[in-house]
Length: 190
Image 1 (spheres, rainbow, N blue to C red):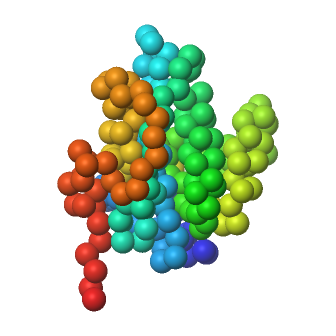
Image 2 (image 1 turned 60 degrees about the horizontal axis):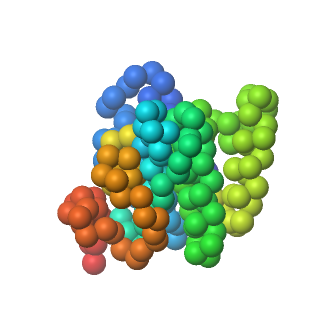
C-alpha cells in the first residue's frame, strides 16, 4: 500500500509541475489482488444531461464488469462527476467487490475526499462519498489522466452524444470497444 501511495503521489507531483515525462499516457493496472474502477463522465450544459460509466478491471487489464447510466437535470460538470462517482461506488459495493481503486479525472473531488479538512465547504459531499466508500473494506481514490480513462469516457459519451440513455451493467467490455480495452491488457509472461 505504501509503495502504491508513493507512486500515485509522485505522479500527482509531476502533473502539478507539468513534468510530462513522469506522467504515463496509458492505462495503468492496479496492484495484484486489486481491481481498478475507471470512471467516465460527460455532461452537456444545454440539455443538462450527464452520462456516466464505470469499468472494473483486474491487474492484467481484463474488463470484469462495466456499467452505464444517464443522469438528468444536472446543473454543472462538478455535480455530474459527484453523482457518477457515488453511483459507481454503489455499483461496485452491490457487486461485492473489494480492494478497489476508483480513478476519475477530477483532482478536486479526489482531494476533497482525501483531504476533507482542506475542503470545509464541501462537507456534505465528502460525507456522502465517504459514506458510500464505507461499504468496501479496502479502497483508494485517485486522479486519473483523462487519456488513461478513455474507455469509460467513451461509454459515458454514448449517453450524451449517442443518445444511449438505457442504463445497464454487463460482464466484460462492450463489444464496440473491445479493441480499445484489449490493446490495454497486460500480456502474461507465463
